[in-house]
Length: 287
Image (cartoon, rainbow, N blue to C red; front, side, top):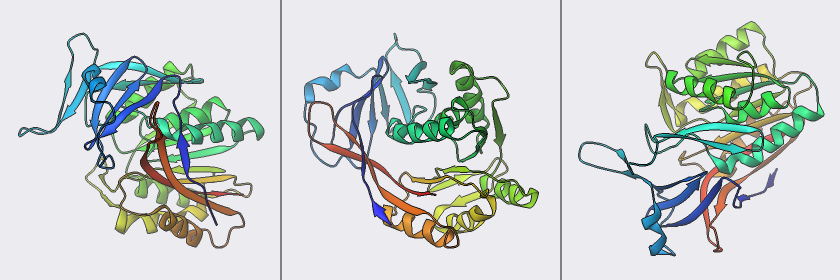
């Protein structure tokens, strides 16, 4: 077991411009957003640039909402290499992409180009960046998410990324319930990606609580692995766990499988400053 923290620097279409006082200022393509982040417990480095924000997520008595400048569209596009995504300020504070996972997209694309006809399973797949990375590299991808709205965004992102409609099997279903069906059907995968929330609900009201549900999900993963399995990724955002905890849980679930576990924090380097904003954790198994 090895610890490797991942730090993402500025990308062509993403920058962490500043952070502090519980918020972060970011550029996604042409749009600058101001969003809350509980990790940013320090002071802002450059107060002056925050006036450049075009979309601000605020908490109000009536509930959370976005305040968007009149000349800014609610949706716009973001690209990373061959991956193109539609971003939006329509819902909660997330805009449709976690750019700090770009190192994982690279790893997935590299695997798909090295090995032919890999099958990939993306659980809690959100708007599909990892799934699109797999499909671009020639993998046979199954994407699971419990939100109909998010699944619709995945299909839009497939079009933006010049993928055929049938290049990714999208399933709107409770993840744990669907994984159990996959096990019953005997389906196997060489690449599995998981990004479980701390709390969530399935389309029929099924409840996901990470402290109760994750161990059951991980116990099913070995039954889904093909004989030539290559990679398993377990991501965490606001999970409340340390990266080592995820690594230990993954190693326990895969005790019968040879391979190695790598884990660590995921962070983003602030532009023009040494500060690192930690945004999540990960653990992965590689053959």
